[in-house]
Image: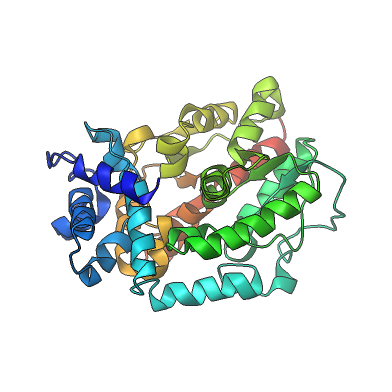
Length: 370
């Protein structure tokens, strides 16, 4: 979405306020400027030449969860309008915030968004791995490689044990989603171009990602910024579901009760709502549905760089999700959700176990009997 399109979108808001009850930042703070309505109003003010210094918090606290877009009668793409607003703040020297600048510096210098040692990117590997000749790349992502290594490990093992051919790169680098989300479009284009050149020169035709941030970046941000991105991009969930739907008998009964939290990107963004539930049924898992599910899911609070800038707000959102979980364990299909929900549960003493879906599928695949 270009600038003029964003301004036109903002002007279409009728201020009906239907979005307010769905917006997590508004519900927690009660501040209208931290709502879709308030953010669109600010974009209209930006067009009118208003002083925008006070708009930084409003635009950078939006998780871009798209909950407002589902209920908006005008079908306004608020998340895209917010992205343009962030770019304007960067242009005027008001953003990124200091924490954001440090993360971007780390991405450009160290190849990851979490200050990890590039030499230790594969420390999670459970066994020796020699990269294979394949046009399918399993792209693990920064967060899973360093902070939620169980996600990386189980994703790798699941692909391997299902017999799905793939390769991996130890020096995989960062997809650049944080840079784009921060509004640094110029730097994003630089990194996107570099990564794309590498994918194409290596003959990569399909990229499989466990990370929803990487999914959104490769599938939507790369084509938007570069004009084209040839490789097919798929979430690990899609690939695993497709394989196991062919032969559910590969899985064994686990006999546990779980709650499943629909991540914003996979549910509202990709429409992948029944696929994880079908996988859980194949594993003999009882899904105790949360109060809000599917397109109506509640955001965990970690999206679009919010957790790195407003940790307290992010954890308040995570706490609400954790409070809705009724099963023995809370399952996610997003490493960002897994990390935020898990760390919030631990820091606040909530005692809720949070796992990435591939852990359960792998356990079912390896279980004895039926």
